Image 1 (cartoon, rainbow, N blue to C red):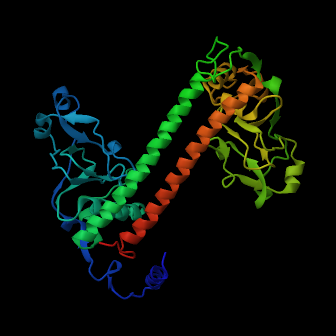
Image 2: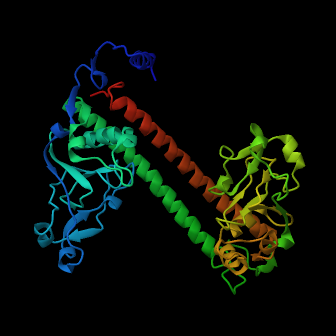
Image 3: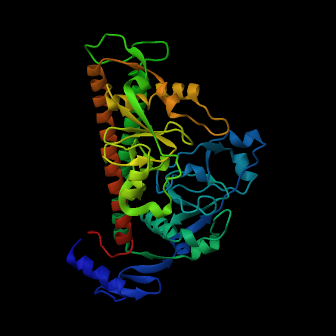
Length: 432
């Protein structure tokens, strides 16, 4: 960010008007931008309705009928219709055919979601559509999305949050000249395309991992996997988890930590909710004093341990690779590999093998429940240490790729959020 932009932001924060800007009722905007109402952005508006679901003839047509669940949160493109209605349905209900290149805005259930529609469509009564736009559609969609997101906490309604047609159309927005609208809209569309590419890549990698977890470990009743690395032919041996691991429960005594034992900078005290995507979220984890940590008789964690959830979200787990000291709540057990590759065991515990064993050993009634002893009795197939290493390296590489794309995705989402605040208010201007 340039010094000029920083100075401009600071002046606006103080309520001062930078050179080339003007003060209006809703804030400070560039001198060549206009303050307009949402209703002035379109020549036509359309509501929606739901044709009778008891009439099958209404639901066998070719006209897209959009409902709130068809729109994806934080995305203003890419709506895929799941239901289609007939012309008779349109004639017999409150829904209307909306022309292509309109903006469909959810005003009831799911308020805050909207989308540019490249084809003609109909909607449920949860929508208001802006049609025959006199502004660039892409710019309008991002500008309205930002406006609605900033006001989500003030929409009317309790059990179902919503906004009325009159309230929406009366909202004030800031609009630049047409060429700048188009440049801003195209910029965010390109950024969204990049975000979508990373989302798809993550989905593809997760799908690949899921398939490999099914095929690179032997299925029930077999001692060899469907897919194997070259050079390995020996059958896998059936073992129990407890033969290769030590098990450490969380402390269940009267010394269990309370609020007074929690500190901002202490030793991690891990709960099931802190296990996220196969690792421990140290930001969410409670921290306890060293004095309390020394008093507890439960698990004393170290690098390479595996945490496994015994109650609630049964089977949820994490491999410890981001800290080397801590302990766990009583809902977790720490599994410490001895003569087995720790990562290999972790991936076993994320495969169908773990699921089948968990169902066999579940001790719960109303709530799913396992004991450390029952987990130690899980049957698992085990190859040679060399093959274990090959398998664990392969899945670790996949996980690293997923994490890399996830971080890039999060960075781009943060960038988009920041740029929407700057570009859609005119604080930063695009070159035309």
